[in-house]
Length: 191
Length: 191
Image 1 (cartoon, each protein chain N blue to C red):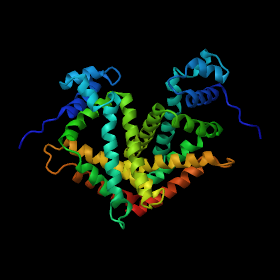
Image 2 (cartoon, rainbow over the protein chains, first blue to last red):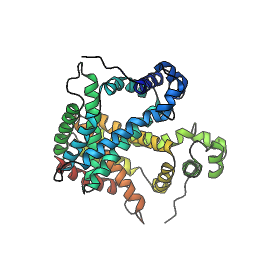
Image 3 (spheres, helix red, strand yellow):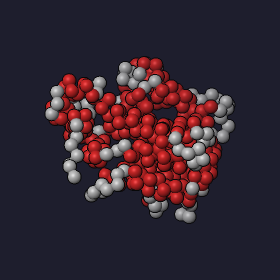
Image 4 (cartoon, rainbow over the protein chains, first blue to last red):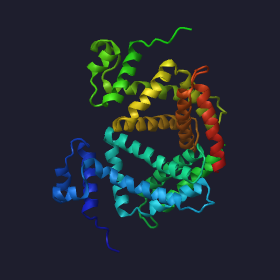
């Protein structure tokens, strides 16, 4: 099996995250990111308008996939089944790049308050996307909000497990769905 | 009944939040905050080391009260009953200043990505404080994490209701506990 080879866009993201971890987000320039990724600055700007956008790009795709998966779940699916459909759609779009990125991003976030704040806002954005998608299906509040928070927790927990696996056989989706099932059982026991 | 009169510290917080809403967090200086609050810059620095700390101070008190309330809940209290004890302790420390601050802070946050990021990190901090306090009571993960997320949602929802009341008869605690009861019922129905 051929080893995964990142393209220019993925190399830029990986280089940026490593530089953020080493020297901080603020101190890292586009020129440094391009140099570390082995591309020119104009290649950087073909992929991203600026340094900030590089972190936001993945987030938008993730939200879109979650929303699509929730919207297209069977009409009679309950809130957590719809969340499961959204999570599965999003997780199936995650490949070797995301597994590679995970631990590096974690290191960068641990080293920077600014990245911690952005990461927190990202979680809020994911929760909002899932809440709105459930409300659009007619799930009442606060049930929609609560189910969405379970979805965010499941995604994070599943991702953390996935990153730590020695070998990736089945991808991210089974890990996320297992985490959601565990949270569903916990939720029932809280009632 | 005497109208509530904010002291210098509260006036500084209110002035700062209004300036953040009007002209952004970055553009607001300590000198402007002091002037609007009708105090000197040295009075500002007697209360806060810098502009950033002004936003963080309330957060630390809130976390401490949540943790104390959870730790001191009866030994046989379940996870959500311990969360309720923490929320009640924290809510009882909130007075007219917090009701005054709420809508202004909401406006400031709506106007600033930076404040949105900080507010999101604040929610993560509250969830972590409550999760750790439950883990210390022997509540297993992910139950502890989930119960803490319900606590954060209950606090936010109760606070939002409280801010919108025409008259404040009973304080924040009943609103937060009602929100928690509603979330508990929703949680049971998700199982």
